[in-house]
Length: 192
Image (cartoon, rainbow, N blue to C red; front, side, top):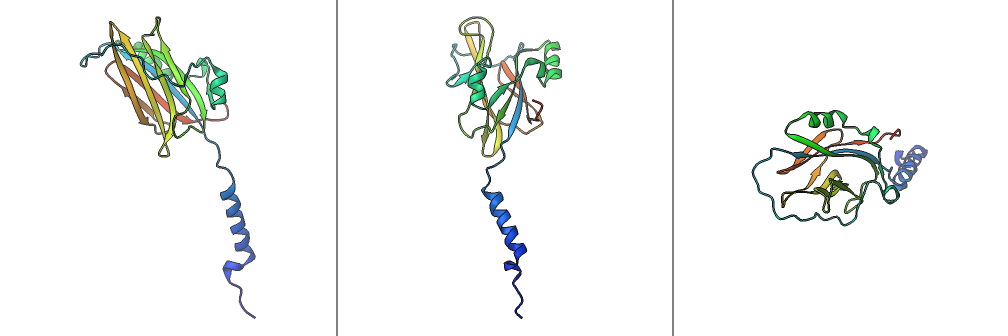
C-alpha cells in the first residue's frame, strides 16, 4: 500500500485552507491615541523671526468640529481625559516655558499620506499669535507626527515645521526657536 505524502494529508489541507482564509480577511483596524502639548520658550534666543506668515492650513479642522473629524476617524477627547497632565504642570511651573495648548484625540487607521489635520489656534487676534495644524500619519509603516505651527509676536514670526517618527508609549519633544511640542502616542484602549 503506497504511503501518502505528508503534504497531501487531510491535516495539511486543513492548515492550508485556514492560512488562505486568514490572508483573505481584512487587516485589523488600529486605533491610536495622541496626547500633545504646544508650548512657547519665553527666553529663546538666537534666530530672528521673519515677517509674519500663516502656515498651510489646507484641510485643518478645528477640534470643535466633531462631526467632520469623526467622519475622518478622529475623536477629540475631553480635557478631563488629557494624558500628559504631569508634563503640562511641569511646563506651567517653569519660568522658561509657557504651555499654551493641549489636545488629546484617538484616530483609527492613520493614513499614509495627507489625512485629517487638527487645527491648533491660541490667543486673540487675526491672525492668532499661534496658529497651525498637527496630524498623525503612517510613513513607511511608522507612526509619524506632522506639525506646522507659527508663532507671531512683535511683527515677526517663528515656525515649527516638522515631521517626526513617533515611537509608541514614549514621550517626544519637538522644538524650534520659540515653539515646542511634547507628545506621546499610544495604542488606544476600549475605554477612550
